[in-house]
Image 1 (cartoon, rainbow, N blue to C red):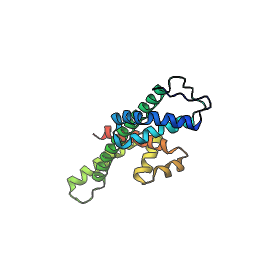
Image 2: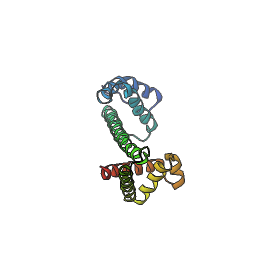
Image 3: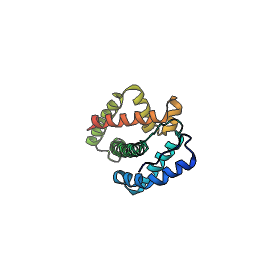
Image 4: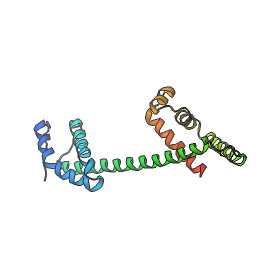
Length: 177
């Protein structure tokens, strides 16, 4: 099923292309990511196609392009889900360590000694982080600043803040096992 777009790539050509391929691409996306997000992925593919219509050269390969773009977006979404799941697991682990670190209900001498050792171990683990990573981690977890606040304070992007936090959590999890 080849639907050719004219050189001008008019809105009508785009509508024909959309009507011809949307159901196929949606069914294809469902096989990777399920029903809930398939529509969004395919709409993003067509939105990107429309946005870059003047710079993309298709020829007879429009179908291949659309399926490849859909596949790529699905894989990116799956990768993002995996990263988010791992990040949540790391956060759970850190929060568990935090609870142990700040638990002051028991005042037994042995418990106090264990808590002091744990606190020292955590402090050493945090100190072993790379400078920027340690700075971002402290602002986030010890001063409860949001990623946006940290990005503004350090004049870096929010994505960079997220990357530093992820790396810090990963390294701390390994050290504190």
